[in-house]
Each structure stands twice: as C-alpha cells, then as structure tokens.
Image (cartoon, rainbow over all chains, first blue to last red; front, side, top):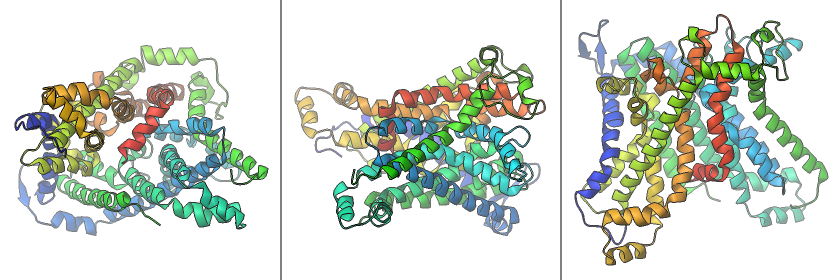
Length: 292
Length: 282
C-alpha cells in the first residue's frame, strides 16, 4: 500500500479481472466442487447422487489401501527430503571451501533443476531396468537381484532416487547462499580456540544454517508430496502392489481410472488440508526465521 | 579460508567431482543410449561410450517419430511445449503484474479480499483438485487446445507477491513526480513500473518457462489429440508404446531433446535463474 495511491475505482478491478476470473473458474470453483463431492455418493452409473455426510472420510480412515498410501507417502517424503538435502549440504559445504572453482562447480550442479520430473523418472528407470540397466548389472556382481517390477523396496528406492536427484540442485543453491551468509569471524574465532573442522561444522555452521535448513525442509516435503506425481507415473505407476502409491497418485487413479468420485474428492480435501498446514507453517515460521 | 588444510581441500574436490559425476550419470547414459542402433541393446550389456547413430536417431525422431506409438514427430511436440511454456510464462507475468499494480497503487473496497483470493491459489496445487478442474475445462470446450493447456495454470500467487514486493520498494516520490507531471495510472505503469521491474520480469520468466515446459499431469489429461501432445507428456506415451519391443535409443533421444531447452536456459542464463529462484521463495 502506497502513500500516494491513485483514486480510480473501476480501473483496479479491470487490472485484477484476469487473475481473479482464472482463480475463480479454475481454482476456487473446482475446489468447492471437490469439497461438495466429498460429502456425496454417486451410484455405479453416475445417475443419482445422495448426501452421505462424512461417510467418504470414514471410509478412508477404514481403508487399508488409503492407510498404506499415507504410510508410503510419509516414508517417500522423508527419504527424498533427507537424501536430497544431505547430498546437497555435503556438496555445499565442500564448495564453501573453494575460492576459485565455486562457479564452475555451481554450474555443473544446478542444471538438473531444469529437468522435468517425468524425464528424471524415465532416465533412472532406464538405468535401473532389470534386463539392460547398468545398475542391476553391477548389483548382480555383488549378488543382489534387482527388480523394481516385483520388489516393493526396490521400487521405492527407484522413485526416491529419481525424485531426490532432481531436487539436489535446488537445495545446493540455497545451502550455498546460507553458508555464505554466516560471518567468517565466528568460524575463525572457533578455529583460534582450537576447534577442528568437524567440531566447527557441528557447533557453529550447522546451527547457524538452521533457518535455511528449516525452509528447505518445508519446500522439500511439499515437493515430495505434490510435485513427484510424474516421477511415479513415468516409472512404477504406484506399483508393485501399491508400494509406491503416494497420495497424489491415488487421488488421480481413483478419480480418473477408478471413477470413484466420492472417495477421490474426499482424498482431495484431505490433501488440501495438508497443503494448507504446510503453507501456514512456511509463512508463520519460515518468515520469522529460526533465529539464534 | 580459515586455515590451510590441503587434505581437506583434496577431500572437498573429491566430494564435488563425485557429486558432479553422480548428477551427470543418468544424462550421460541416456545420451550414449541415444547414439546407438537398436541392436546395441539386445546383447544385455549397455554400452558406455557413444555409438555411430547420433544423427540417424535424432533426425528420425525429429522428422517422423515412431508412428506405431501414436505420437507425432518430436519436433511437433517440442513446438507444442514451447507454445505452452511461453503462454504460461508470459501469461503469469502479465496478469500478476497488473494484479500487483492494482493492489499496491489503488485504494478500493474489498482490496484485502481480492488479495486473499489470489493467496489461496497457493494452497490449491493442480494435483489436489484434478478431477473437478478437468471437468471445468472439458465443459468450457477447452480440451485439445493451447488455451486449455495454459490458461488454467496461469493464476499465480507467487508471481503476484513478487511484483508486490518490487513495487513496494519503488519510492513514492516517483509516483508523486509522475502525478505532478500529469501522468495517469496506466502511463505511470507503462513508463515507470515496467522499465523498473525489467530484471525481475526476466528472472521470473526463466523460472516460469522451466515450470511451463516441464508440466506433465495437466497436458496428459487435456490432450487426447496427438496434435497437441507436449514432449514431456509425450515421452511416457512413447515409452509405453515401445515397451513390447524396447526401442531405447529412440526413447532416450526424445528424453535428451525434452531436457535440452530448459537446461540450456538454466546454463545460459544462470544469474537470472538464481535470482528468479531466490526471488520467488521470499
């Protein structure tokens, strides 16, 4: 809000119109439909619908498949977040030691951000292909029979690696920026007091990096929960035996393939609540920073 | 540097080189696979060095594609991707700028309500409202069109916030000077705000272009006619179709072409890209 505002009354609405119309037609209206539908049940032919209250939600809490999907999503999100943030932090700390080669390494590490998750999925799917992939070939030498089409854990590892791979560059950039904002004097003081590099990292650098870490934690969880649909669809399609059927994939599958509208809508509503919680966490706590 | 430890420097380089290698590995393997004839994949061991068929494979995919898979030539799909990405990026920037202008520079009833309506879009990613949104687009007859591909994705709270922040840092004196000189709001917008936010627009454009190009779920749903397939969504159809007789060299050539434009944008405009990334997360 500016001190010197313009006084026109119609013009601001004209300026806002495109954004608001798109928001209403493609965001708010569909969201309202999803909420409405979550309280309804259609018969098998989609002819009549009846109000069933919270029955769709009750059905979800009693559905073994849905609870499994919740568990799969939690494991998946945690693994992707920890893996991509861990690798990125390691490389950011290494780059932080460099003086001349920082920009070369940065260029070499940031480009996977631009690779579509679907393409990342296809690439890793090829590498892990049980018959001609390079990694199953190497794993066979150490006696491990890789097959993500039959083994649940293999499938999970595949989608976690493909999703985390793409996210490393994003985390790396923010960790590097975070590390650069830590005053060198603090680390120098610790060095003079006789703290070695490992001690300095855990007692000084890592605590001071916590605002960045916390911010990335939220961003990565959101990414793993909502942006990885295409990784799943391009590789495992939720299988084998539901082992990689994360929540967003299940909403799509139940809604489009299974045509179970009530259940799909109820799942959408649950997901909306999750996003709202994550957004509120992001805005309330990340804005203020975790300060020391 | 705090102290001289050659051992640690060596270790740091080692970690980074390993990291770069791991990050590049999948793309290298895809590239190698895309340069071999189909016979290279029958033997069971994958080649690790490029083969002789680079030009054959790529020109085949760009020119004619795999007709049996029902996907159009890759050049058509890339064109569709380009149109969609540009429409999304430019559309988002345009409507977000005008919205931010309205919210920052005007006082009118329900201003806060309008702001909150835009804010809410952040909490409704397409994945969670997918079925009803598809119905709306189908009812509007927007399936299989560039409008259907792009318009439902161009509302953007993030971009609106970004421009709001930019406008808030522009000194009030400029507005006052413009008004004294008799400039109306639209002239002020065009001659002062637009030039002053040019760098922010460029940085945002880089991020949004990548976002648009990499869309997957939405194009998959709204395109049933192969004329409108985008390359990122088309790869899956191609890979599925050739699964019976794996034509890995062609799938991987398509994957390489699908990542080429956004990766080139990131590498070529690295500074703008980093700025855009940091700006949009404020």
